[in-house]
Amino acid sequence: MPESLEDFLITRPPTAERPLLGQTVLVVEDSRFACEALRMICQRSGARIRRADSLKSAARHLRTYRPGIIMIDVGLPDGSGLDLVRDLSVNEARIGVIIAMSGDDANAQPAMQSGADAFISKPITSVSAFQAAIIAELPKDERPTALRPVSTDEIVPDRIAYRDDLVLAADLLTTDPDAETVAYVTSFLIGLGNSANDPDLASIASKVEDAKSPGLHDLRAIIDKRLNAVVSV
Image 1: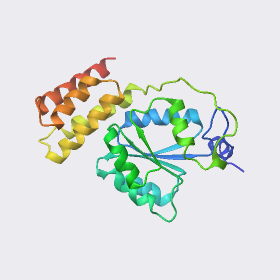
Image 2: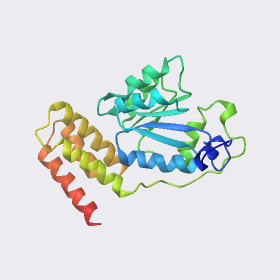
Image 3: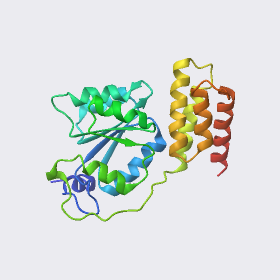
Image 4: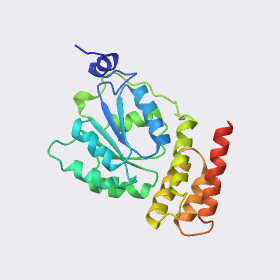
């Protein structure tokens, strides 16, 4: 007998309104803003979600439980998510659905070649598009049988998650960062800018990534400006 409401919901079969009931999703994503969007979408879809923010954290999760679905960001602070995709795809106890994610569509082909079942472009905001992408990869006996209402909802995460991501980037750039750290932070901020509908942030981070003007000073300045704006709201 289920011990909690969550356990009760997870043991129920999928429905048209909540087509991912019974599923557990492990999201391997370093951005709290992007992960908050996925949390809200999974909640509306009926799925239980857990989060890992790095390859190391994902390995720790996978040692203790086996999700039915794993969503892996390609760019992670301690390595490439494609390495995890590759390892999981050839594991004898293979996870049912392996999804790769990235804000750069150039990663789609490498992700599929690494063994992902599907690739999803970030930002992920549409409830119906997310559900369709996941359901397409589920075994037939785990898919909802009733017709699914098409949701037009677009998810907008809380700005606190956006602020947390900016704080992380600011901390990494506080001292004189090495080239590897700069590469990670610029990629992280490009994704954040795209997810949070902040093209100026994404543009400046992209120019730094390409070693064009502006430099790190300008990148720090726009991060500080965004943080001040979030705090004042």
